[in-house]
Amino acid sequence: SGCGICTNRCPFNAISIINLPEALEDPVHRYGENMFELFGLPVISQGDVVGLIGPNGIGKSTISRILSGELKPNLGDYENPPGWDEIINFFRGSQLQEYFKKLSTGKLKTVHKPQLIDLIPEYVEGRVDELLTRADERGKLDFVIETLELEPILKRDIKKLSGGELQSIAIAAAALRDADFYYFDEPTSWLDVKQRLNVVKVIRSLQEDGKAVMVIEHDLAALDALSDYVHVLYGKPGAYGVVSKRRGVRVGINAYIKGFLREENVRFRKSEIQFKIKPPTPEEEGETLTEYSNLTKSYNGFQLNVEEGKIYLKEIVTAFGPNGIGKTTFAKILAGVEKPDKGKVKKKLKVAYKPQYLKSDFKGTVREFLHLKAQGYGTKIFKSEIARPFSLEELEDKRVEELSGGELQRLAIATTLSMDADLYVFDEPTAFLDVEQRLMAAKAMRKIIENKDSSAIIIDHDIIFLDYISDRAMVFHGTPSIEGYATSPTELRKAMNSFLSQVGITFRRDKETRRPRVNKLNSFLDRKQKEIGEYYYLK
Ligand code: ADP
Ligand code: ADP
Ligand code: MG
Ligand code: MG
Picture 1: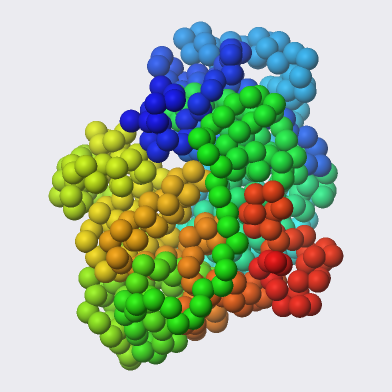
Picture 2: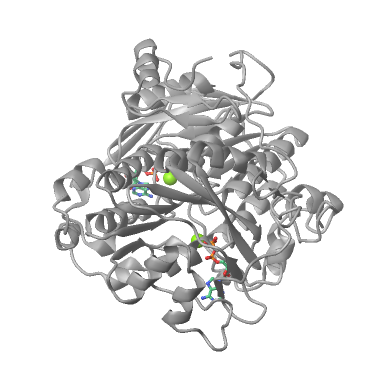
């Protein structure tokens, strides 16, 4: 596999580095013989938010564990790990020397919001308000509750929270502690767009108080709004990772999009990620795949109303809105998993469906799973159109039960895409994927849908991904857990305008890469765009 330029096992001609820096210094950490090695560490400074971008398995969480003091770096000597004196000496001449001096003597306080939050309920007892009151060393309880909109869940038991609620609480608890250095590992997983921006506000407030903050994030719009500086991580996932020099956030994210780090002279992707400003799609266009009437569905306490709509052949319709508003319920109605109370989908469609929550209880290897569930497994076309973009080969020997969140997601999307269907429904496909995997998935979806003369509905919260993949979009609004309304599919700009005006944020386009960037609240552009009702972008 690979494009032939590099010898690394590059799953989609993309993520491995193509030209290596001449010599790497000694590693900061190595897990063991033939195990992952980390080269370099980021520069974290007071009053700044520093972001890390890079593929899964490149060492980002390892960095946050080292800097927060959970993992003592072994400088590559896993057999005879060095003492603190040697570690401090290793970093002489850099600000990390002082950092580790203080960290090793307990003179420096760190707080770490870990990547995996599902385990929190196993360690923490009690109600949300009790937990947050205990954590509140900075006297910011009211601000954090208000900004993260936690009021409705304050009286709930920690053990009874959804993924998104747990994420918000973990972030709140970390931000309430009084520390010098704050580490947030993937804070936006499970959160909707508004919640992601609320997180930006809370993390930004730490920086405004002069704290030092590091954030690991795959949602580029969130990372962009969060960070002052970024470090790009490159190398070979699972084998080694190198921390790039620090760059300003705009330049750093653009370098990442271009796949080239000029100062280091490292190219880590063959080509640039291309963002296009799409012309508005004419309303009446193309052949219709299906139509549906107004649909309603209620559960005890919740009611969903879907405005009638039409899906064209070969188009990708995205759906977005807050959590708890009925997006998954709509996906299930289309997939035939749930029946609407009123209304119906006109044509009987063959639907392939990737649910939001994935089960990994299959007893067997990925190979066995694919044999059983994937259509055309082993064919040339499966290899090139599906196995390669989703790097399935490297997963084949693993047991499905042991896959990480991102690996399971890749397997689920790939299997769904292999099916022969009229309509593909993907519920939150970017969850746990890194930036490269998100864009690779978008490309693979687009290609397969066009080749198969089918269509897709994709629910997601990543604005950059949505911008990249949408032909048209539908917006969900209402009151979460009580009432949800879904609009008909409409052109992306109109849908984004309606959605963003409710969230209260505006986007502009980066001049160089055309990627969407969040405008600072009350900045000139923010005010101007709100005035003329163009929340998404100016031409
Ligand atoms: P990222 O956060 O960038 O996805 P991680 O820092 O979690 O990456 O992991 C980097 C690599 O180190 C991965 O290949 C992972 O499997 C490996 N790794 C992480 N923790 C351990 C550990 N405790 N022992 C051995 N290998 C590990
Ligand atoms: P979203 O995908 O937008 O987050 P969902 O469609 O999953 O929202 O859920 C919308 C609302 O319906 C939530 O309040 C949820 O708790 C409720 N709900 C979803 N499925 C069921 C069900 N099977 N039984 C009862 N309530 C449900
Ligand atoms: Mg990680
Ligand atoms: Mg959902």
